[in-house]
Image (cartoon, rainbow, N blue to C red; front, top):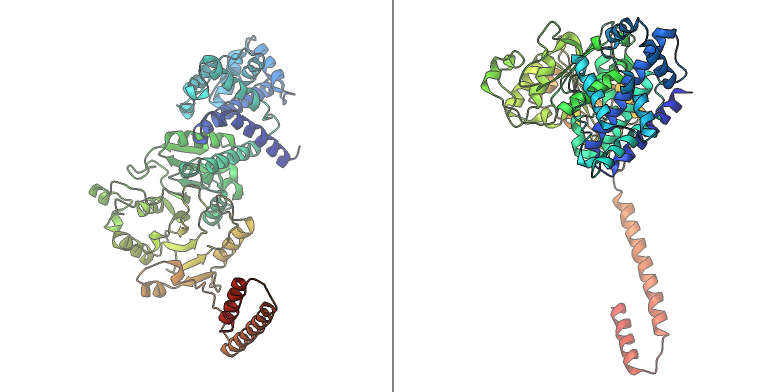
Length: 532
């Protein structure tokens, strides 16, 4: 089956699973059930396929065959060895009666038991630190699933039957990963404002990633860092554009625990090896991370919460991330705190791309001082204005700031991409054509009338370090000059036509007659009024 067909079929099955829960709770809640159970199926199916491969050195015809082979193998003397071999590779072992295949068969026979699924979740969580607390957001005993034990159990049972139709045996990691990404995107669309914390629209992700990876595509062991990673979709984009995707090391941090869990699942579903994912659940600004062996990265990608509050405690002035600037981002707007955190973790010849609200380009006070220092150091490489209403959690226009650590020159490229979009019902979207146009302007790095401007440091200094895009890219469309003589002739012609029409109308009125004196009096008054 073609990859796109397989992907569509997979998405269709997963979306049907969502339908089972949609009437019971909002998308922000049911995404945890759906994505968590899909993930368990992935773990279970991968496990059975691997077991069968170890026993027979081939792929099973179906998962039931694989399960039977696994049961038989456990009766052999070499069973312990088999389990240890899988554990070393997969970091977990699933007992036959806790496989998804077993749960699906039970659901079809109306003998499904929620306690068994809970036990399965617990076993995975306890098998390795990689999976600790991974399923905590899935409450299999929630009243939202239905009233009473039977209805709740039936809801989960129906969900398991529906998701079992997803053919993971014949889907590679990217097909499944992309289907998962699609679902996350759909949930973001349904949940609206709540979605900003876990999803960056794909168009924006593409631009950020293509810019940050530019010139580093061939690097083996490329490291990518997102300190506000959400569901990890921005991090995972790197593998689409790298020549050696299997060697990429992913570093990510996320504050919200449920979103952090989503990112961990997302990594596995995209086939990322455990040793290549370094993910942490924590507050990026409050405590610096990472601080161990690997602290700077080839690519830094960020879509932080816009103008969030932070403590801005005086102690941060001694923090290496901020100490060079002599001033902290204001308490009410942490935008520059996030930016400086990312820049601190960038390698000397890497590239960072961050999405922020336009205010960071021109606001004064502390932000103005930080911006000036960055510009004097040549750290700001490009500023790209994006269309409004691209994001699920805000309709405000945003911009991408591209930063570098060490480079010759202090010029800044400005790109106005605010009109490069297609209007949508809820959100605007950028097409591949729009994205390519932005990347081409970025790569050319020259002034293009009404689209981009390469500003010298002197230009920026003259503008008092204000980076507001309209100061540099003039998109003003000059209106056509009006020919006053032609306009006068046109007005005379119109007046003449009005007069002719009026005379014709009066002539027609004068031809009207009536025996009623009152009607004739009114008619004559009306004619006199028109004739003036």
